[in-house]
Image (cartoon, rainbow, N blue to C red):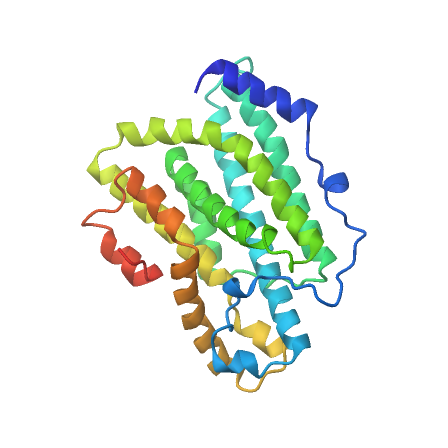
Length: 292
């Protein structure tokens, strides 16, 4: 990426910061017609059980599930901060890339605070990752080389962006949530120019084996996120009968909905650098029901 472009992005970040404290109208309460999650992303919508829920249960289902999404966003932003901190160690403070990453770190930490504040604003109680989730998260941040960590972080950003697009474009979604996703989308748009350049740098040098490995890193990160969204405890909170059975139906329903509504841009991204090949396609089909 041209240095003048990076300098311009640094200037924008300094002169026109988007602060969650002022950009998001935290003082606005939900109105009766507001929802917290578009139905296209709802784990039960499309199943018979959904039509039997009360309006209150439908609203709470969306609230609990969007809290899980926001919780995972914070995790993903933290992962990207780990990558950038590692990458910066190889640069000089006067380097334009170093200075850009420093601005991006500031913004990413603000995003984490914003997501955490949104969870609190929604009176959310996020469900912690399973031991397997925790192990994968700790292993990836501690042991993966920085280019693999970058690919995993970028995968999470793609999911974040997809969810944000559905929510910020739906006028029925609670205003605070739409503004949160809008702020995130604007700042990630600034970051993407630099990110594309770094992606090209990594993938141009990568042979078949490394592109295959990158593809599996992206795949497992997407799977990691998707399995954090639908939880049995949510259906217990809604006081539904047979929450275990409902959870299994919701999990399978959401897997299909995620593949249909959230995977397209991710698949295009992975295919753009040769990550969808004979060694990886079966795993994308098996774990994420990708239609490839």
